[in-house]
Image 1 (cartoon, rainbow, N blue to C red):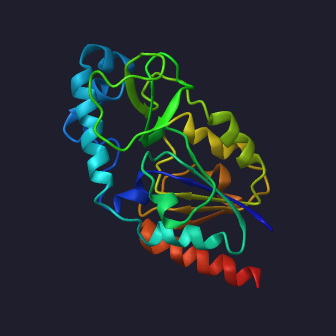
Image 2 (spheres, rainbow, N blue to C red):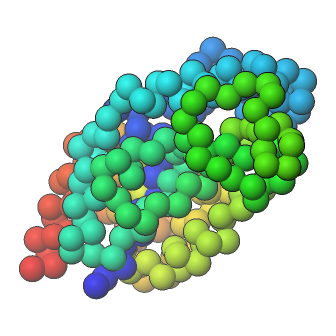
Image 3 (cartoon, one colour):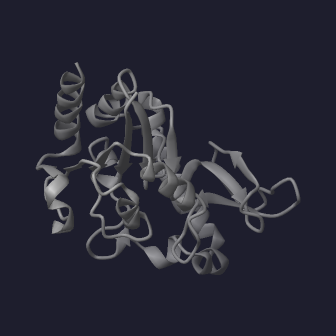
Length: 230
C-alpha cells in the first residue's frame, strides 16, 4: 500500500476543545510557559507544574476525537499511514489510528525525573511523593522547552519514506518538529490543511493548500485520496 505520513499540530485537537499549546501572548492556560513547560520551572515549583498537567489530563477525559481524527483513522483502510503529532493528547489513538508518534510526549504517561527512558502509563493526578521504581520523583512525560526530542530521528526516517505527506493544524514554525518537512523526498506531494496556511514557497511545485479547519479539510482530503486510489 502507498505510504502516507501525516504531521499534526494543535489545530487538529483545538476543535475537540483542547486549547492550543501556546497562545499569541506566550501563555498556556494563563501560565507563562517557562513556569510550566521547562525543567527549570519544575525544579523551582514542582507542585505548580504537577497541578498544571493534572488539569490538562482531566480536560482530556472530557473531550472526544473530532471529524479530522476520525477521517485520518479511516485512511488506514486504504493506505499505510503513520501519524506524527506534536500533540500530547490521545485523540488520534481514540479515533482509531494505529501508528502514532508523539514528538512532544503524552499526557497519559509519566516518567522518572532522572531517567527519561523509565516511562509508565499514568491516568491519575500526579503529586509530590509519586515515585518511579528507582525511588525518584515522577514527572509528566512531556518534552519541555530546552529538552531533546527523543523521537525526532525516528520521525525523520518515517517522513523520508512518505509517498504522500499531509500537514494539518500546525504553523510549521516550531522547531525541531518543523524540520521534518525537509526529510520528505523532493517529489513527494504535500497537502497542507490550515485556515491560515503559512508554508514556505519552496514547496509550491508539489504543494496543495486546503484553506479550512482540520474538521472540515481533513475529511474532504481523505475522500479525495481514496477516490483517486480507486
